[in-house]
Image 1 (cartoon, rainbow, N blue to C red):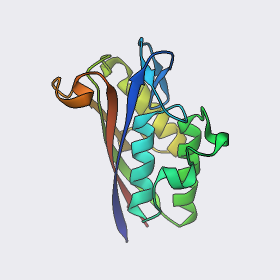
Image 2 (image 1 turned 135 degrees about the vertical axis):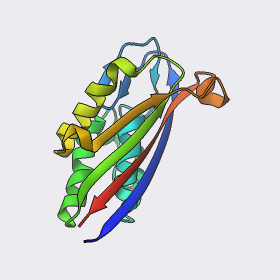
Image 3 (image 1 turned 60 degrees about the vertical axis):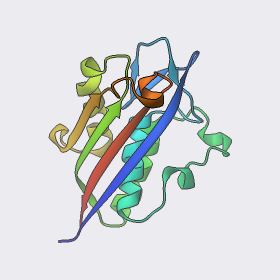
Length: 158
């Protein structure tokens, strides 16, 4: 058996007049994430981890912000495309672990739905997808509520 591990990171700026979407969940908040697609930092970090595990670059290579077809794109749809790339190379996800870093809003009430969305798209059991949330203890741009970031690790098997 072959194994590969990849890690991913993403950050987006918080702004008015945008939805706050994390793990495919539209979370009620007065600010949302700015980006070319829906700016779902959690899903983006997971996609980068998946691609990185196989040295396939990053999501900007496959879904460049300069391409208008990805404007406002649903990141769960992009995640399904990245999953196909992985599966077409004979790999499968063993598990994912991720963390979203945000001062506000509180994410705990949404964690299970985020996990279930990601597991459904990736055709995994929910216990294969770890989603956690924490704050940045008011430090740095995330701590000042200027943005939200996410980290992810993915283990692939062949």
